[in-house]
Length: 103
Length: 164
Image (cartoon, rainbow over all chains, first blue to last red; front, side):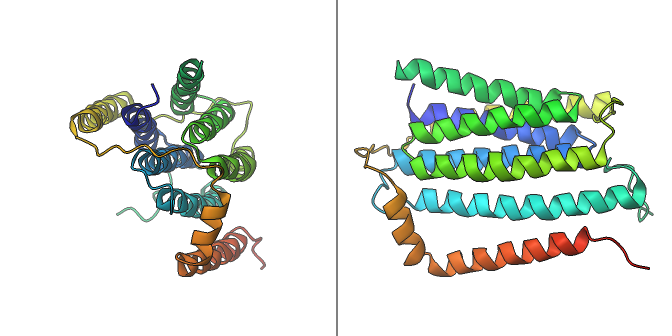
């Protein structure tokens, strides 16, 4: 079971669930959860290729995954600030109802 | 034994990700997301990425997930069920697109002749990652620090109380 393909399929499943959440959820926080799923699947791919590509001397996949986690933390903080602002302005966090600028 | 644990973790990841996506209650989604994140940390352990597994638990479960739960609590009335899905045809087309992408990715994963060379498991990755961050990736490390500072300032500025 511990093969490259099993990790790739798992991360594909995670990516697809995340994409489905981003496409179908109306709530901003739920969309953010979908984005976290997508980032996790990318990280899983990076670490799996690092392991099965014999890169254990320099570990570039791990370092890349670390930077992805850093970026995810920054993104979550800013996105939640935006969502809270949206709630204060429109009294909803459904992204399809905040359409004041829509022509 | 190892196979059983791997399959268990994989099932945990997939099932909890499914609940993240389909649950109608956002708090349930957030709790299911915790299962997914812990499962991915377990997969990191399987991939001999001990440092990343610890970082995943610390930052994702300890930081980002708590932030998300705060966001749910601050913007939702928990008692009232909210309509958080789009309409039915929209969901159907999204499911079709996602299924097509999944089939494509799976075909790529199994058809491509990967050059697999499995290394002997090294003892601990912390030293290697630390050395890489302080030498080869020093600039990226510093830029990441600036990014975090800017994100902190930006989030504090965006969510401050308006005066006047």
